[in-house]
Length: 206
Image (cartoon, rainbow, N blue to C red; front, side, top):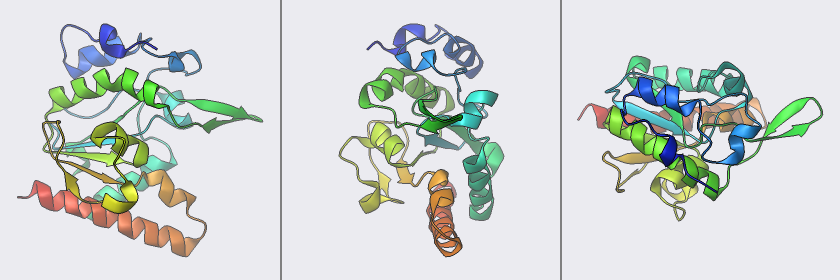
């Protein structure tokens, strides 16, 4: 498997990278995806949120976190007191990996090689944004940013030192709130998610 590094533009502005990423063939995921879903937000955003990969809705619209999980995320950010205008949203992998089930496209977790192939885009986004805090959403994103030994169940909400130029913390992916089996479980999952994001808000205010 190749790498996205050869597709990165010489000029590493967000606009230039977003345009170049449309032609990325660093791994084979582009073959079954509608389009590349690059990150979205302002340069110099204080917070960078990194999910696993685009979902079905994101693949169609070409924007990150525009489906049901994105609505959960917006609600949680508002409750945590984090200004949505100061958030940059992206994913560890920029193409939707899926398998057919009848007429539906079901998410498949990207493999380690696919995450590694796409990492140059993520590193370039971090360099361009220079966020104060990086937040991994979900176990796959956390392991992509922190390392394969990281366990979200043991260390969610904690800040971890990495080689990246900003403190990193991890919480659940907002889609996990939607997957909770009943209303009480969803409420509890949402409260825990908001609590993790409030930790991020406190870190920003220091």
